[in-house]
Amino acid sequence: MTVSIGIIGTGMIGEEHARRITQSLTDGRIVAVSDVNADQARAVVDRLGLDARVYDSGLELIQADDVDAVMVTSWGGTHEEYVLAAIQAGKYVFCEKPLATTAQGCRNIIDAEIEGGQRRVQVGFMRRYDSGYQLMKEAIDANRLGEPLMIHAAHRNPTVPERYVTPMAIHDTLIHELDTFRWLLDDDYATAQVVFPRKTRHAHSKVEDPQIVLLETIQGVRIDVEVFVNCQYGYDIQCDVIGEEGIAHLPEPQSLTFRQAGQHSNEVLQDWKKRFGDAFDVELQAFIDGVANGTVDGPSSWDGYAAAIASDACVKAQESGQIESIEMPDRPAFYA
Ligand code: NAD
Ligand code: ISE
Image (cartoon, rainbow, N blue to C red):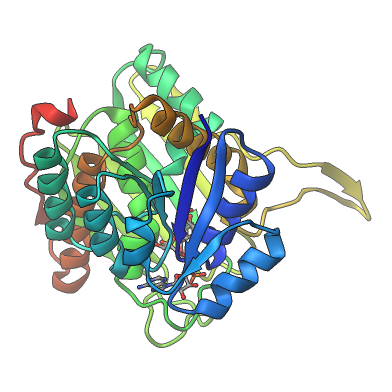
């Protein structure tokens, strides 16, 4: 079966996903696109040579009879409305992170999905499909490190645009770690705290940068994550899991080692597109295959909700300067 897909939001990642579905993956084709900026949608259709209809509104695209599955790649604040509309229309939906910008928004999606009686949503937590993180998960699950005790991590971007403000370090950037660590550890969060080191002169006025997020899980694992989104030198994702009997270090992306002009060096990637390119391929192929088989079982609405609960607590901690507690409700059997 070829899955006919409609994409809402044809900006940076929407175009990337449309390109990989059209040029690299199998069994999916883009039949519809929509963007509040219609010129942007038309430009993507032209650039990729898509045989796709451009819709004036995302809600109209969701209703189209020839759309089997919807991909929501618009700005985070618009996700909830589109995901709810897709569920109500009985369509499968891949939603880029965040599932919604608040935990309540995610809860609304969960309630609608449960009422519909079938899992329809996959959230764009692509790190679960990254081969390096998968090796870490296998090592932890096989007890090769003993019990995990601590995680030291860093999420660094070279720069961010003017519209990026302090809470986005949490709900746009840290949200990846919030999902990844609960998946790696099979645990949830109990508390969160955010501390602000000296501010870099490269950050604009509306973003505090860097930030250090301190998390404690229910099992007592302590996690520190440096979020530094104007680090200048590259896109750099670091993660060490410290266990009772060993340490696992997230593999560095493959790159040439240079010996040149008195230096011994490796290239540092500059953006998430290259760093997680392979993971995006596997993630979207899994979604397409899941739609074709009627079993979408990647990161779920529950995972989006759990990350959002922790994210809300971290944003509160940014404001309060205090250690904030995190209450995670019981997972419904529907998401077991
Ligand atoms: P972008 O600004 O490049 O593109 C977003 C597009 O959505 C724009 O073209 C905009 O016009 C359109 N849009 C905005 N509101 C809309 C609406 N109501 N209806 C239809 N279209 C609308 O942003 P981006 O970097 O592509 O990010 C989009 C989403 O993808 C965000 O949620 C972001 O967090 C996520 N993202 C995920 C990753 C990842 O690593 N998984 C990487 C980048 C972005
Ligand atoms: C962006 O939206 C992403 O999702 C990237 O993966 C992340 O590294 C970056 O910080 C976000 O802004």
